[in-house]
Image (tube, rainbow, N blue to C red):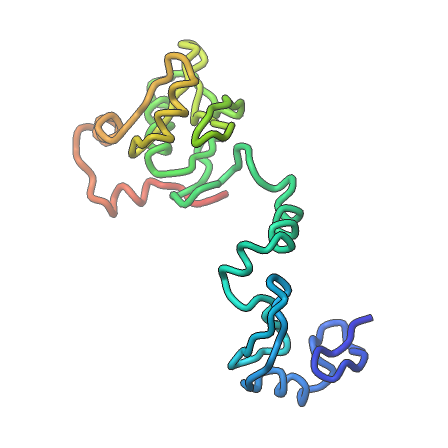
Length: 205
C-alpha cells in the first residue's frame, strides 16, 4: 500500500504517484518550507520545496559528511562495483568478431591482430597494486596467448597508470603512435578521414 505524499491518502492505482491530479499539481507548487537536516539536525529554510522529492540535507557538504548517507551509498553499491565490466568507461564500445572493445583504439588493435592471425584474448584476470595508500585492482586490456604477454591500450600515462603497469611483468603498452601505424596498415597505407574511419566502428550488438 502506498500513500499520497501530499494528502497522505491511500493511492488506489499502482501506476500513479499521487491520489489525484489536484495533489499532483500541489506537489509542484513552489513555496518556502522549514525542514530539519538529517545530517546536522539543524533547521533550514528551503525556498522552493518539492513535496514529491523532499530534500533531506541542508547542503551538499552536510550530505557528503553524513555517516547515514555513506552507509546508504555503501549498501547500494555493494557487489556492484569493481572488476572488469563489459562496455565500461566512456569510449566507443561494441563487439567485433566476438571480442569486446571499450574504445576506437581497442577496435583498431583487435582488427589488426585478427588480420595478422595473432592469437589473443580479452583479459579478465586482475593484478593488485597500491596507489595513494590503498590496494586496488588492475585489469589489463588483452593477453597475447603465444607470447604470454599482457597488453594495455592507453592514450596517456599518469602516476596511477605507472603504478598499474609496474605490477605486471613485461607488459606491452600500446599508445597513439602504434595505433596510428596499425590504422594505416589496415587501410592499406591511405590515411582515412575521421568520418571514414568512424564508419568502420561497429555499434553495440
